[in-house]
Image (cartoon, rainbow, N blue to C red; front, side, top):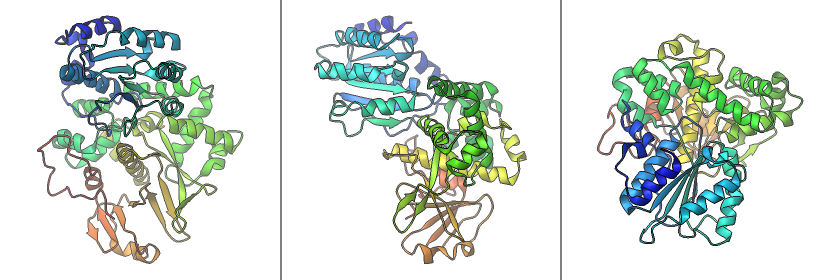
Length: 458
């Protein structure tokens, strides 16, 4: 059913049709049903603009269709309509379709919402919204938009000051499924290796379904990710070979400090400025974050020091990884050094996910701390400290910590539980389960032997 026919059905209130909700029906009929949790639990009833950005293959379009269905069920016919940016020609076509739909809203509707999927497919989309708002049109409508080009959506949002309504929050990042959700549905299958299976999915519901059903993730999933990343950078005129070279260097270097100059040299780029531009674009696609050194005394980042580059989308990292890991068995065969790298990246992805849900202004703002003798892997934007160890740690390894950080506490993610006045050790499974957010299935309790609230150790 095309968009125009769908909107005619919505105007007539003919919503009890499976062909009207193809993505919802597909989602409902999956063997596993993962919840969408990215900080927007309920749409506001006030008018304004909501912008949801995130990578492809994470379920944005399905969430949008579910939100549209909820709207017309709660507020009746003529309360919600839909446009698809992928099917529109240009900005003029977008404006034309918005104005056509605007005439179909019911005057009796308590709430009016226009859902636009993949709005970033349209060059100049933000100018269209600005023009419509400045003319005073659709001032009683809530625009709900999604986009896979996170950079374009973010910059477009920044070009709409004062035109997003009076909503408390308008900008959201669509994150992957939570480990709690994956654990609830898949732990009986993977048992103590559930966290490895989750790592390999990168938080994608599609990959999660595949690994649960078939015990491996098919290559087509990775190829979709590769095509998306390479396609987005090609649009901006970037060299495909340089993109591949930059990603290869980052993934090979792993958790080592390298900085932009080192990245440029090893990737064959002309200079560190060019390397920074590639990293910025990969960061805008929510794939990579640059982790700078943190000065604990001044509580500032040291931009001139060598930094680390962490993948915050493990689906993307696995898609470009030289030795692709499709199954738990393949992960178990790699060296401990490689496992340690992926474990640290899993923690980076999880910290990023949590900061997105909380609405942190710069959610990929992850740092590390270092002295001549010691290093701490992660300093979050809230100032929490995390150390990641593949093997088993003990309190004696961190006897120095209370002297350097007398007012802080350190969470050590390793294979052993322990606790002192300043340091707590937990397992990766405990860390992932303790995200501090409500359980996706109300009334369900996590395994009491594994779950404690470690989400905020300080």
